[in-house]
Image (cartoon, rainbow, N blue to C red; front, side, top):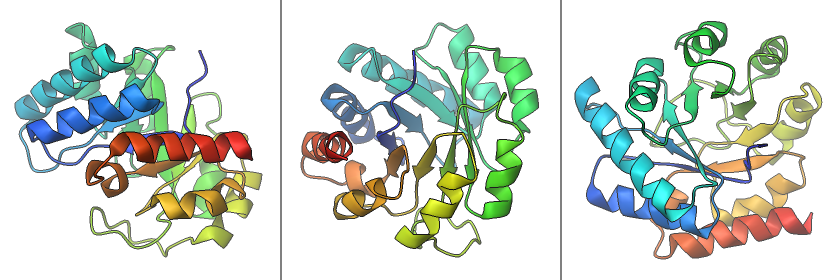
Length: 214
């Protein structure tokens, strides 16, 4: 089934609270939960990925779970029967073509971009990729890409340059979503905007509503 990218939630950290918020976001209709946890061992990341995936599956079996960067962790989790659908790759990670060979045709594979050149290069891999992330929307404390912020005006040229669905990422907050929807992006990715929200369900529902209204 086509993946719903409208509300794309990215986790941060490995606390029990993170698992709870991921499940609540999925229950509210988030289409994708990306498991991201820096500075942990591979074993810890695999265990945490499995825990999040299990919580998401019980909350909403329509939500997809992808692993940040680590093709090996995604494969190991899937082989163990975890509710993991694929991987999201950065520019310095395993090439998408190799990830596709390892994870198979059914896997969900995304790639981070953020410049016209990177989007055009991703377009050349249209048959390999399922979607691209594009950012940063603005400077973010959670991850430094070295690329200049796109702002709202930076997205229409990127959307026009590819047939792949584009997800805006990089310190996106709920108030930013209406303007981003109008640029033609297929989704918005939030880290702190959901992870730190008093009501993750309200944030997710509001984002989905904005896309329905476009």
